[in-house]
Length: 79
View: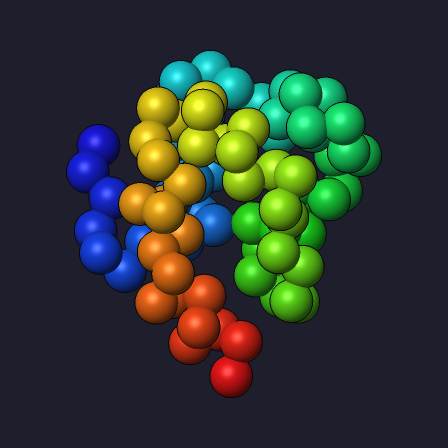
């Protein structure tokens, strides 16, 4: 899997985690948060950034955080 410069969408992240057999509940446990926090972060419906989740997801996918969530995407989302 190659992440584009635009980053990955929540759906793309979910699909890749499923391909690897990693459940969202596992991500939540590794990050020390409740499972709804993972769902909320990946849904993109609110401004929840998931700072505790990002390193865990990046590690699970074997990608650097800035490849999944590029800084320029963050700046656009903050507007």
